[in-house]
Amino acid sequence: MPPETAYHDALGHHFARHADVSPYNAYTDRPAMLELAGEVSGLRILDVGCGAGHYAAELLTRGADVVAVDGSSTLLDHARTRVGEQATLLLHDLEKPLDFAADASFDGVVCALVLHHVTRRAQLLTELRRVLRPGGWLLMSTTHPAADWQHFGGSYFAEDWVDLSLGGGPHSIRFQRMPLETFLGEAMSAGFTLERLVEPRPVPALREIDEPAYDRLHQKPSFLTVRLRRL
Ligand SMILES: C[S@@+](CC[C@H](N)C(=O)[O-])C[C@H]1O[C@@H](n2cnc3c(N)ncnc32)[C@H](O)[C@@H]1O
Image (cartoon, rainbow, N blue to C red; front, side, top):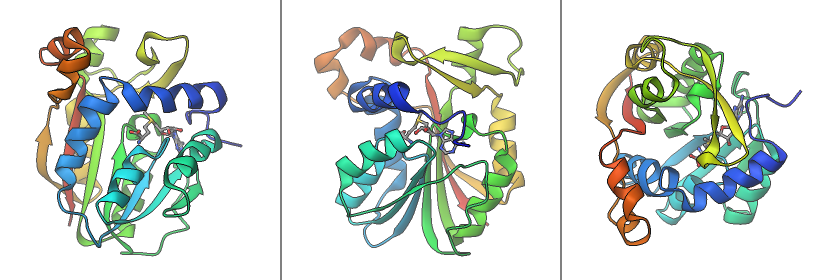
């Protein structure tokens, strides 16, 4: 069974276009995460929940060796079109162990806007730690808990599953909202320490094409991005 939370078919095609141009993904989350990655030339990097391959393409351009996995064959097709044969792309359900990867076989892991889709988060984080070499890094981003609280209401500490329209369009995604304490606490319990935490705001290029979105996202948080170190 393909994972329910992966972006299949029409949702996958919609997300691929969204990730190209969206103020959220293209101008806010991705630039912040790539800045946290720093110098990657010569590193072996695992991109979990790679979507349409935007991170994989950028990491390859910067000289990394990339293995990218996703639970959606629709999005893996987009990723294949984007990166060709330069990266290893695998169809994999992140609810399951990363049995394709040896212990300590990666220098870094990118997990952008994915963890909140996964039910077995403790297992996934333990697996990410296993496949990282000691001292390796894990970059993660997630929806900002304050933004979720403002949007969905109820308790800030709620950990319920919610549906969110993707970019205000007809397609919606399902994820588990959680307070900061849960997001960071689970990563630390799995054997990571926090190196940096960023509440990303859009890069200046967005102002040229969408000034209202640029101004809005400079006032209202959208994502949390963290750089963690494997203990
Ligand atoms: C918001 S998208 C992020 C994609 C990419 N990291 C990016 O930032 O452009 C979430 C991704 O997680 C994938 N996903 C969700 N649940 C999954 C699961 N259980 N196993 C594998 N992939 C999953 C979706 O198919 C989708 O590609």
